[in-house]
Image (cartoon, rainbow, N blue to C red; front, side, top):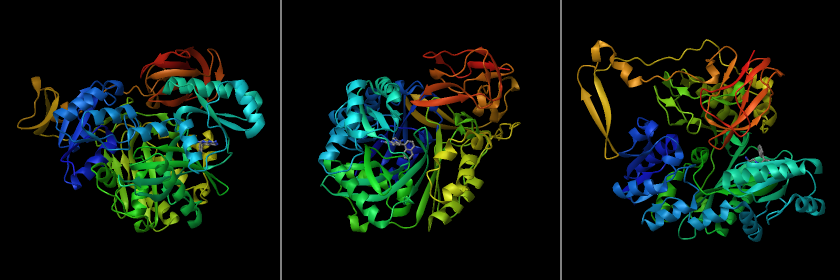
Length: 586
Ligand code: MV4
């Protein structure tokens, strides 16, 4: 086993990995960006090193700097978590060249699954069912039209070859919408993955998203840990995940488990991975493989009792799998709710801000994987998912009740999160019947009912302390220093607690108002993909104003109230900063 592992990530997943490292007797090294100096993942690690400024491109994505820190800290391996560098084959190769173990699959497996056309071809050849459609790239709209007429038929899904997780995904209902869909998918593929290649699949009208967790070791042992259902999504972001899948019976479970292990074998997989697929009318089709540990791996841990991250680390250290397929037993039912700093009533608008009072739920079979704590400021710079709540119980009905109970105990003061959304959704008939809930997640009127009370005031933790912890950086390496004594109060001005919480940034989030009357303020920084209104237009409350792309996510900004667009501060293709006025609506 390794002596020390660097965790090249932040937030809840970095902490999740460090917990298992500690249990394995392995020291952990955190890395952090400047605004993450005091982040919980930094405090959780045995050692911490600064990477650079806030933007991920200058910190969490900086391969050279991360490898330099790995060398400096004498880490033998790097765990990439999910996102950032987790599915970057060049990073996996760079680790190998630097003599550091990448805790993940071989770079070739990342490459093979990274190209969705290549993956489809490999899967088809391995006898894995894929969604009917093309495996070769489709060069032009004319080619697309011909191929669809000859073999696929409408409706079709046009997808970017470099894509995944719904990025660069468009639907063409008929020939008239084909050109728009084709060009949209190609443009998005080019923008996000520098690859405008697209392929075509038959569009399945109402599938379920069902994925299989696999584990593969270096000795050729490949097992699956059953399936997860992640059908409750919004704009391709998963919101709720569960295991087992409500629409899967034991026969189908065995079939899709085998599809998962066949897929992993076909690319020489090693490590933990997930085979994603679509389930419709009892038919299962391979969609893509995620070559990393996923956000929702926890529900599988709850129903199998297997620590997936522990297995992943052991495999990377060269140990064989501790489980044979027969050893893996599915027991009970687990649900995970993603706790995002988002306002569902405003169509899931980002809602960054400072966490006031913070209390996590507890009790039997309740698990919280969180990346935040009281006083922590959720920055618009990173993923809005601040925590995950996972529960287990004997069956889906009991598990749902337990989740609603735990959500009720969860207190995140001064912030807007998805907690009320989850409480409302899990109480619906649709959820109880095991439906995909697509109608609800897209129902603006239903979402608006989840509005947060208005005069909500951020609570401040205001504890007096005379014992103070400081972090100092010596040549970029972080040390913790405890200073015990009188509070530092220059000119008798600042009380003890204030310095710790300051500087309290002015709340500029669109959620809490702010700015001139009627001003719609941008809660995030990003690129304006689309402007849906014109100056002078009369718009309804909740109407789409613009779409801002940030952190590879498209965020719909909607009108907080009905009125006339008196000013418009954004244009398509332009950029906006947090706090900028998008529009003035009176
Ligand atoms: C599809 C599809 C229908 N037909 N592909 C791809 C990424 C993932 N986030 C959802 N994806 C879909 N791919 C074809 N050929 C429908 C979806 C889809 C979906 C699937 C299951 C459950 C919820 C979904 C929500 C949006 C899109």
